[in-house]
View (spheres, rainbow, N blue to C red):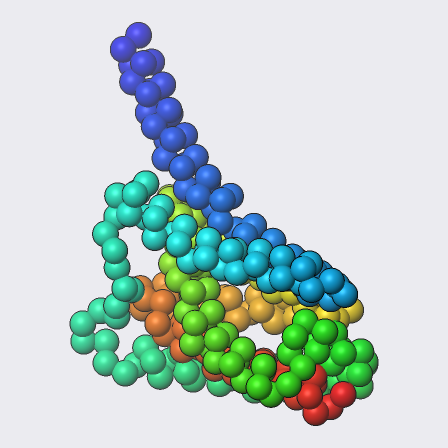
Amino acid sequence: MNRMIEVSNHKIKYVESRSRPLLALLLLIPAPTIGVIANGLLAESNSAILGFIGLAIWALCKVWIFGFPVIWHTRIDGGEREYSLLPQGSGFRPWIEGLGLGLVLSITLVITFLIVKPYLNIESIGASIRAVGLNSWSMLIPAILFWVFINSVVEEYVYRWFITEQAALIFEGNPIKSGTISVLSFTLHHVVAVSLVAPIWMALFAGLAVGFGGIAFSWLYHRHNSIWPAWACHAVLDIVVFGGVGWIALVAS
């Protein structure tokens, strides 16, 4: 009888240990997609009020995905505030690996774009990009700086650290399964964002590219136990991607 109670209590503790990180993921993962949809759809409205509401929802979602992980980590999980510093003695190797992998992926992305370019309606895509507010270099350059130096850091902090670590609690530390959750959740809102300005096949194709990037970022995170090499890789890719977005919106179309 006591053995049955002991086993039962063990199962309850196991369920609780899995349900808490699962709840954290359910509260966090949908937020970026909600923000992208609200801003993408309402920004094209002729109503300034609706456009402002869409931007406000997007901004609130950004605040949520930044604030929620640290609050959950410190208040719910009882963890310490950390800065994902590289281990002592790492030297420049993690940065070189991050930047080098980012460069390789960027070259691959540019070659892929040149291959599929004849099948794209550049004029239509450019018009859709300008419709969401990226209609001048004065708007685009600050946006690129934001994506590279703020948004990509936040995404690595959210997806490579928080989501990976919460998923690891669910999957008992399995790096493949926890990395898969990180990559899939990272890919989701990018597919939605591209689908708002481009054909669905292009959004799915972009999702495939983002997924490969997510795999690279996750590999760097697990390899170095820090988000910073992954951010270096991510930043290089963002410069190329959003430079291409600017070229389509303001030069090619």
